[in-house]
Length: 232
Image (tube, rainbow, N blue to C red; front, side, top):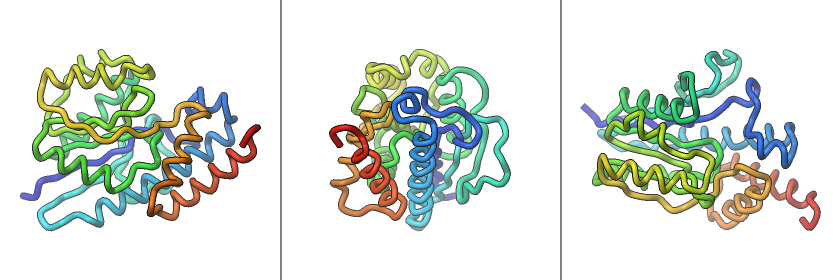
């Protein structure tokens, strides 16, 4: 049987739940929703391309793990299969998401919707590193992480021990995973938590050679948004 790789977005859904508090505080609820929706479109497009690029003998599946127990059936999330993250803390829900995808596949990749600049290079690099490593982490510039991938189970105690939303989250996850297997790393990226992160994201998109249509739209929105700010 072909080896299967599951790729999931771990996120809230803008039409149902409050979005990131710190970003909303900095740029406002309506602008925060626009950013979220553009980010989700960017990632959906990349996920679809990731499936399309599958080679012979590869089975690639894409998912969206949603915060709400039920989704509006009118929301179009194709080609993503959707499932509920479950109840509990952030660590509980992230662990549940990783376990769900790994239970259905030989390998699992979970990313957040806070790093919409992720593209095929990151997915392909992760898949390549999983050939020789048990886990892969994508470190964020602020000390967190934007991607977690693996081919082995991660215990609940690991997810419970991580100090999420701190500058030590990546280091703690790395330390814990090394107790259970080998770990490889992707290049660091920005994940957007606060308004100032938008400047860094814009620069990352600006210096990317080829952008998808939705990333072009996000880049244009960022350019306008940042130009409207004092000193922009």
